[in-house]
Length: 390
Image (cartoon, rainbow, N blue to C red; front, top):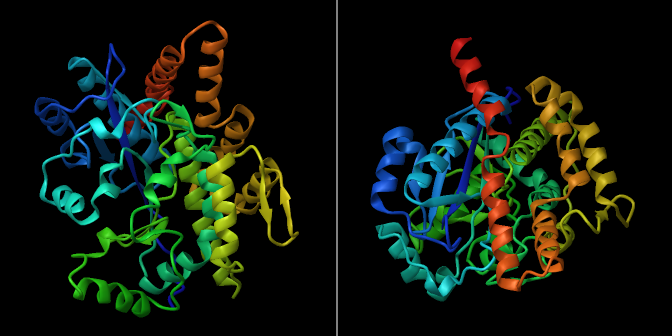
């Protein structure tokens, strides 16, 4: 097994929803909008499964700061172009009151095939996520880290939760998106493979059976990318605030670096059964950061702030080496201020307490999400200028 240091480069994908600026209902992206976005962003923007969705992806970035600068540019362009069409983008995993029955698929062969293959499961996919790619160049190292990293997936999910509402109702969950997504095949926590060849053999069985054309239709919470030499964390809701997203990206990159660093001392993170990790995954999905998670070593539920503090200190050396220590520490602010799911509920409760109807309170939530989409982008955009001039 290779001990050569991976590149630990980053690539971040975010999926957005488009709403009508007046009604705040979901709206299909007109072809002219997609053409304008593509003319400015090239292949960094693409349509998504539903016509009301749009996806962006950074280039290959060396640092979290570079990824933040690129995402700020992408968000800025999407917001400006959408605004010219009377639309606004949301970086949120579920629209607070939209009805999936009323949405339409993007007319592309891949999406038509998904609808045909998955039936009603596909038609409910009115959800968005954030995917973080970390460059792990060696195949065996990638599969080894894939076995160890799932312990941390629930913690990252808890910090990202932004989908408490579905069709106008408070679901009681902080990440209802996973409830929808887990109905798809080949989702959830990844299985454990002992080698890259074992992973390839397993995937090839499904490909040879004619059920999928390649591994891009494997949608585990963590997977080797089908296109790049990366390990791709897919469990997170998309974050309305870019700063929150970057804190999660930094934690993801730093944890992978920490696991690789342990290998240099012939150590590794203990691999817990999927049943146990799945329980924490459910707690993150249900409660976000509010009710804590199981610390398997202690055998008890521990408050999330304490667990996060342990992780932050554990990866300090790695974050400093990667140049993202400030972004890792910013994860504390999510615990202090609440996740997007927490903020959405606060907005809704405040509006209702002020006499708003449920319908109007739902719209207030969307208005807050529109505002958060561009919050703090300017400082990251300036990073683009600094990088260009350096």
